[in-house]
Every structure is written in structure tokens, then in C-alpha cells.
Image 1: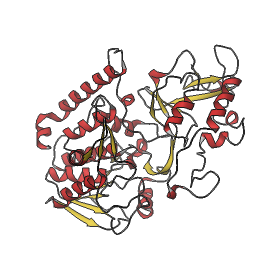
Image 2: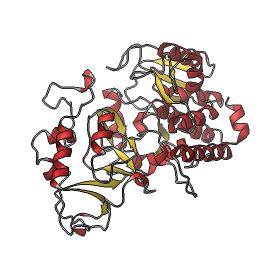
Image 3: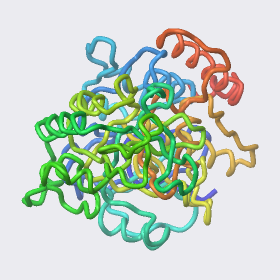
Length: 445
């Protein structure tokens, strides 16, 4: 059997190579370090953790804890390495970065079915390949991917607005409507009077922003490298008190049914997923610190108790418009021999990237061995993430990390967030076991 080529020895690439090899499949794992480094990477080992040494919460009743437990049951090398390298971090799973990387590097290099190839890959190889080159994919390979997927399907910067859960909105304050009644009630609208708007404006322009990495700045007044058409909402506000009212917060074409009048300003919420459980704040891409986003955006009428499943970001990130070109197994629709994994697919975060590598390899391994396909149920966290990658809005796709908001709602109403999350986690693990079976789990431990 010809070896599967895995491009990139980050979390996703190592998980993919590890899973394929443990299924008896030859793997060529290509990594450009140590010959070439991205601006963010410094350590020569595989699965380098760049921004933080935390893999988020451990509790299975949390989204991150649930995803990690699913990964363990799927034979994750990252979870194995995390247990070996963990450091005290309260309720989170944190690791010693170098020990974590060294553990995975040694395991990968010593596996008899994995051949490590050093050097930059500049063109997509023929045959079965998993591309897992991360958010700082090299210019040459990015260009090769752009030629493959076509113009408009590869993004180089993640300028994303916050996303909130539908059930956390105050429906007494928001109303459904499209401008000039075009398209029915496609948007939810949060109306503001003048005093509310001015209070919001004042807090927004004085809120604290997140620092940028050196390679994400350009010395301009805005500080961003290439965010054409994606100005942060706080930067727009600083241009003048009424700028937002002539931009994303313009009230024209809308009538508040409670007052019968046009609001002074309005924040629009747009559906983020087909299940109708998530909404994004239209035009609110931002570089505010997460805590500041929660504080300031909760001033918006109807969002006082909003649950933010994703905060807005403005950073360099190479990723695909996945709903238009990938299926939920991370295969390229027009050529299923080519798969993607990691942040390039639109999953966000360490463990999410690693988990996508497992799922991509799971499907490819079974295909190569002539076995029936396993589709992880949307009730599982990994299944829900992959469904989001496939079915998110192709016209405004935003990367997503694990969160309870992407799971289908429970059939019964449960009071209390922790009790509800515990029930969701229990359902997820049962669904995973039913999908993969006990024997599969034992064979991948």
C-alpha cells in the first residue's frame, strides 16, 4: 500500500499520522521544522504549543472536557502526552510544553509505520494526503491550496464577530425582522434608544484591546496587516460617535414593534447554524479582550445575560471556507483523496485541531481498509464540530471551538446549567460508544 502523506507535524498532523499508523497504514509525515519556522514557532519538536500551555477544562461536563474524553476513547496521542506532561492548573488540564512536545515527537519518530520527512512542502502531493499545516501555513503551500480550492475559498485572516446562544437571548427585548421587510424575519434585532447607544459607544471606545503578535501588525494606525473590509467595531467607533449608526448599527428599514418607530440604533443577530441555536453579532468583528467583550456587549438590549460561545477575534489565520468545499469527514468534496485537518478547517483551539486530525484519519483509514464509514453523531462534541464545518454558513463562515451550544438541544428541559451540561455529556459519550463500539475503543487505547 502506498503511504498516506500527512503534511504538518502539529497537533492535527500528529494525531492523523498516529491514528493511521495504528490502523496498519504506512504514513509519510512531512514537517518543515527545523529547516524552516513560522513566525510563531520556536521549538523543534512536534505538536508545539505556541500560545498557552492549557488544554482547557477537565470536567467532562464542560465542552472542552467532553471533547478530551471523546479523544481519549478514540486513541488520542495528545491526551496520552498530556497525562505524561501535566502540571498543576486547578480545574484545567495544563502541560509542560517541552515535555508534551518531546513525548509526541519520540512516539511518532519511533513508530515503525511512520516515516518522518523534513522539509517544506510547497505543492500538494498526489495520492491520499491530509493537509494539517495550521494557521500559519507557508506562502508557497497556501498558493497551491488556493489553486486547488479556487478563488474566494481560502482566507488568511480571521476577522470574526462574537457568537451567542439563542436560548440565552431576552426575547422580550429583541424582535425578528429584515430591513424593509425583505426576506421575512431572517435577523434578530436589538434596538437601542439614544441614551443606550451613547452609553454603549462610550464603553466601547474605552474598552481594552488584546495585544497583537509582531507578525500580525504593520505599523499603521489600525495596526492590522490586511483586514480590508473587516474593521474592528471599536476602531470604527473611534472614527466618530455616529459612525456605527451609518455602518453595522444602522436602523434604516427597521421598525421596533414595541414602539412602532425606527430605533436610534440597532444590533443585528444572524443565524450561525442550521439548527438555529447560535447567532452572530453582524459586523462586530473585534480585537477587544474577551472579558471586555462580555462586559461591553452585554450592554446591548437583549444580550444582558447572553452566553458567548465564541468571542470575536482579529488575527492571522489561514483557513478554508469549509462549508463550500469540505464534507464532515474533512474531505475535499471534489477530490476525497485530499483531506484537511486542524485550524485550517475552521475548528479553533488546540484540542479541536487535534480532534479533527483523528476524525480525518478515522475516515481515511476505514476507506483504505474497505471498512464501512463511521460518521460521528452530532450529539458528540467532535461530531457537532464536524457538522458545523460542513453546514455552517458558506457566505459568512467563522471558525468555531468546542462549546455546548453546537450540540442538539435535549428533548427534556433541565434546570441549572451544570445539570444540563452533565446530561449533554452523558448523551454524547453514549452516542460515541454506539457509533464506534467497544472493540474499536479497546483497539485504539
